[in-house]
Image (tube, rainbow, N blue to C red; front, top):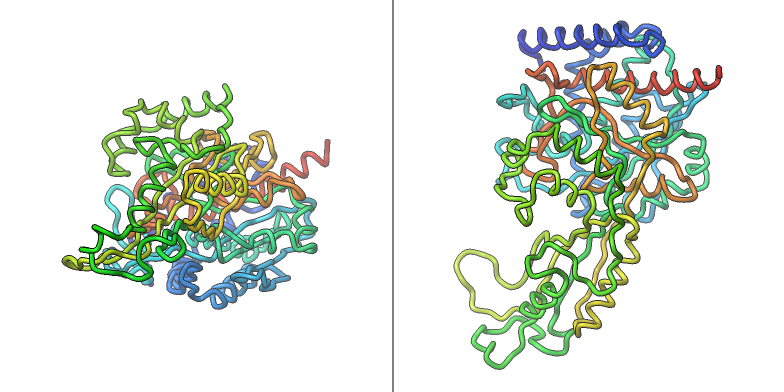
Length: 510
C-alpha cells in the first residue's frame, strides 16, 4: 500500500509539529533520541497500517465462537514481533488469553491490557467490507481505516505495538518493563478474565507494576482529550420466557387464533420487563437494587468543566438524537451519564420476524439485556436483586442467563499512571479534561480490586468512531493539526512510556 504525496507531506508536518512541541517541553522527559524514534515511526507507517489491516481481516468473535484459537495465536505472534521475550497462550476455561513480558532491565514495570476479540457485524450494514480495512476519506477528519475492530481496540493496540518496535529499531533504551495480558472475551463481558489475570505467576508479575493501562484513541474531533478515572461495570444477560418452563402457554408455536384461550410467553416477558424500570423506561425500579453513590463535589466540578469545553450540538449530531432524557440541560445530562445505572434492552427476539406476517403464538421469547453499574454496585449483587425481584413479582419462571459482566472501577487522579498522562498531554499542547467515570465498561476491576489493587486507566492520542456499529473507523492521516493520525498516536505511547520511566528515575533520585 502506498500513501499519497499529500498524505506523506501531512504526516511530515504533523510529526515536525509534534517534535517542536515536545522539544519546547521538559527536556529530561524526552527519550534519549526522540527524533530517531520518530524517524522509525514514519518509516514504518505503511507497514504498520498494513499490519492493522491484516489484523482486522482476522475477526475473533466470542459471541459467535469464531476464531478464538486463531485470534490468541495471532495476538501472541504480534507480542513476539514487538519484542516481548516471554509469550504464552493461556487456557482460561473459555476463550484463551495471552500473557507476555518484556524485561528491559528498567526500574519501573507497567501493566498493559489488550483485547483481541471484536463485536459481531452484518456486512449489509457497512459501506465497505468490514474485514477489508479499506482506507477512506472522512470529511472533516482525514483518511481513516474502516473495519470491525479498527478503533475498538486493534487500531490503538497496533499503534502501541508499533511504538515498541520503533523504540527498539531506533536502538533506544526501553524505559519500562512491560507485563501484557490480552483476552478474547471482552465483548461478552470478560467471564474468565480473573482466571487469566490472577493465575499466580501472572498475578505476581502484575504486582510489580505501577498500574495497568489500555491503549485507546481518546481524542475528540476537535482535538480535546478526556482522561477517564474509572468505568461503569456491566452485566450481560438474557431473560427467557418459555411456555414449558412457565407451565402455561404452548410448549411449541401454535396458531395465533388460539390466543383467545392460550397464554402468551411473549406477553409475559413484556410484562416482566415493564416491572424493571420506571414508566418512562429511564430509571431502574428493581426491588432491592443498590442505590448509586452520589457524585462528590469534585466529580461534579470535573463534569461541569468538561461539559463547558465540549459542544452539545456536535454531540447530539454525532449520536443522531435531538433530546436528552427529561430534556435535561447539557451538564445535568452528563451528570446522569456518569452517576446512574441503566437497564438497556439490546434486542427482543420471539416468534416470527421475517417478511410479511406469520400468524403464530410463539412458545418462547427472549430479551437480551445489558445493565451498567456504578459504585457501590457489584455484578453478583445486581444479578441477585434481579432474580429476587422477578420471583417476588410472580415471574420466577423467567430464566436469567448471565453470559458475563463485572464490577465498576475507579482510579485515583493522583496515581502515577494518571499523572504521567496529564504531563504528556500538557507538553503536547492539550489541556486534558478529567472525567469521573467512563459510561462504557472494561474489566478494570480485576486490576483495581484486591488482590492486585492497582491503578488502571486508558491512554492514547488519535481518534476513532463507530465502535460496535457499522463503519467503525480509526484515523490514519488527520487533516486537523489538533488531532493526531496514526503516527501521532504511536508517538503518544512513546512519550507516555518515557514519562513513566522518567518519573521513576526522579522518584528514585529523591
